[in-house]
Length: 170
Image (cartoon, rainbow, N blue to C red; front, side, top):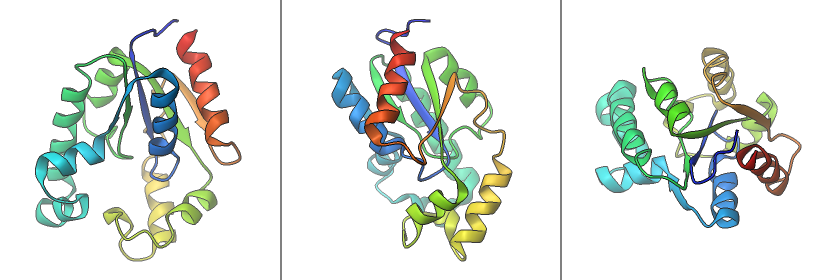
């Protein structure tokens, strides 16, 4: 299927490369890059960590879902979602309708290496290694709805981008 002028929506666990790959795809295609977390921070005037602290994960997911739906109204965008954006009911379905959904994955060890020392990830509070394992287990099937999946563990950003563009252009 050819997705010309449709959105490319990147989903996957934190630290799988959604923001980095999204930036290269936007540059390659001349599309607007929408980093969902950045839009939420801008709209709410607070960090993701603050939103979690103030209202909990359910509160954050409601805001995230509303912003996702708003951003999907446009076309020719690269949308980099937060790792949990797929968890809210209805989000997977609307993503599938509005563009090519690509799930980015990485090994547990790679994710842990990428997030170690990152203080801006509220879901990793405490032992990051244990939290990554727990989240991976909780979300084991959460990204399976995507049109295609790319393991970013041993691939460069350019290789991941090329693979996605091949699917996008049909």
